[in-house]
Length: 545
Image 1 (cartoon, helix red, strand yellow):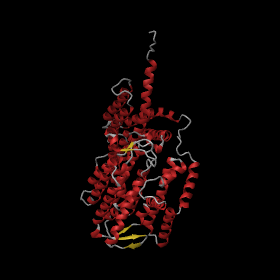
Image 2: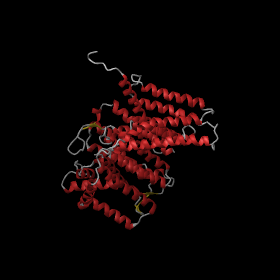
Image 3: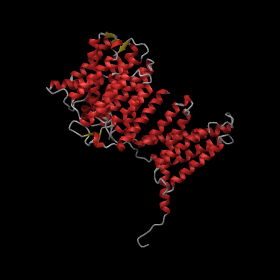
Image 4: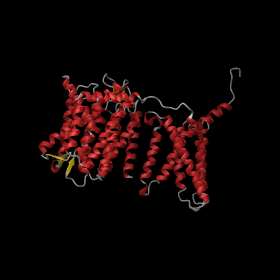
């Protein structure tokens, strides 16, 4: 549950910081202007990386660096984060950024020079001579850092890429029993999940260089981080990490090779990256992202297989041949684009998929189901120690609904405040009934009302799921508000703390989440009903009166 706690913590922190920056930071300070090579057509702020960067560095430092064993990681991460933030604000030259990246990579490598391990690739060892390994690592470091920066050209692409890469790295840590490595990648997954809430098309902000350089740094040092967190420090198996970075290697190397072949400067920007080619070929934003994420997932699975199966010479030759073919042979790229284009033509990836029939009418049953749930809880606790608490809290919940439903109250028409308020009451309501023990567990009385309780929850879940599918676009992000995500991950965090005796049970957290969904969908409808009912009963004032 520690992993879940860290995910919930960084998710909530990134969500709050993002909302804070969007509300209070002047967007002109970090504004990304549209150009011919960029896909967005409206200037947008690029301080998303500041939000998740601060969250990753602060949260990560305090929960993972308790013995200062990862100080090298966080200080280097801070340097890359600051370099990117400065570039976002002043747009500094590559003549400053590149030497800074080289210096950072060199300083990271120096931390391991005294315990330089044996490096293997597909089972074959690479020299552990620092004079050879040092330049190779710095080249790898600079290449991966800038490769992440180069793919940050489409809403949701870089964030989704890092989320999936961190997920596969987390699996690598789980297979090898490397807890700290799991926690590091959990933090990046949580931060990217929160960032993607704001970065899906149309994005509210971009991550900017402050975010892309930090994410690139994390990917570049993944092998060293894995080595530093392993109990037995003998070798670094680079195979899974190189395979995991295959998309970045192919895309960046192919673009640089193509520019040199056309006698262009390799650092001159263009629209020849794979995400540009896919989007221009298919015209589908979602189809482009899905294709790249499937591409990445295939390499992720290959990385995990390479970790557990110890591939040999033939596998290495096949892998390197595939990489070289995708980089050097234009026909392979063209064939891939034609194949994806045929697939996307068969599906309307970017069309709205709201149903033609009135599926949402079933929302009207949610208040009835919630009331049935409350009454079953109240009856089950009758005669027990929690009776007075549950009865009073039930009345208080009903009073809240009535107060907020009256037009012209303190918070008129603010359904979100009502949902949050009732949700807070429900925590105490459910918590108060955990001590009831008056009704025998085997009694038919208990069985009947338990069926009512869980049947109500089941129907609430079905209605909520149907409405989520019917209402949501862009992978469902538009269905949720900030308050929804904060409450859900707060429940997740409290459930993960239950083994320490300071949280709530998983069952309670699940029931609260279901009831919150019922509130979210049902209470605004009740508000509108009471408002329209009052308006229909009000006298119509005409000009003659």
